[in-house]
Image 1 (cartoon, rainbow, N blue to C red):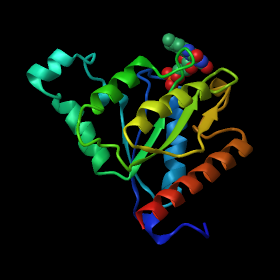
Image 2: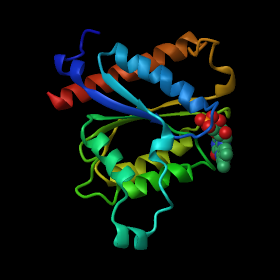
Image 3: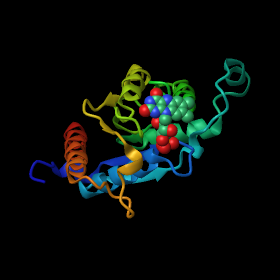
Length: 194
Ligand SMILES: Cc1cc2nc3c(=O)[nH]c(=O)nc-3n(C[C@H](O)[C@H](O)[C@H](O)COP(=O)(O)O)c2cc1C
């Protein structure tokens, strides 16, 4: 990839799919995104969303017991990274409640742990819009905390039929588009770091 700056070789990303479902389509998409990011030279650490499921946010709990250690752990992961690959389902045209709760807890750590970190948002849905409406909602709380949300996003429509047995995307045009989006994302993060 000609314009991948040397700094892009060392960028460090964390990745997770915001679904608890065993057969999550978003987890399948995330796996392809991770392969694409690694092909661009990024180091990617994949996490299970269960690690980031916290009790329902309760200001009294925070006041009496502080920010729970698992939230602090996620904060440290984000701080130690250059950014995030996040594939999220769309629930009712918006952000799944579990994920919003994770973000709300994370937002209680100051300074914001996502400040100046980058994110590439992806979504998969068996619908025809691929969950893209939810990603527009997801940008808002992350940007409110100073995260750099990459302008391009990747939404996979009709996702239940989209994957081959080996987990790859059947459609070569979609594979190419995912690779191209990832190339631009990793290059941009690398340039920002340089
Ligand atoms: C509460 C709920 C709301 C949903 N709302 C939408 C929606 O607005 N748009 C959509 O495309 N799919 C919607 N779906 C379907 C999900 O996109 C679908 O279940 C998807 O497979 C979930 O992602 P996962 O496979 O990674 O778990 C909804 C599912 C649930 C459980």
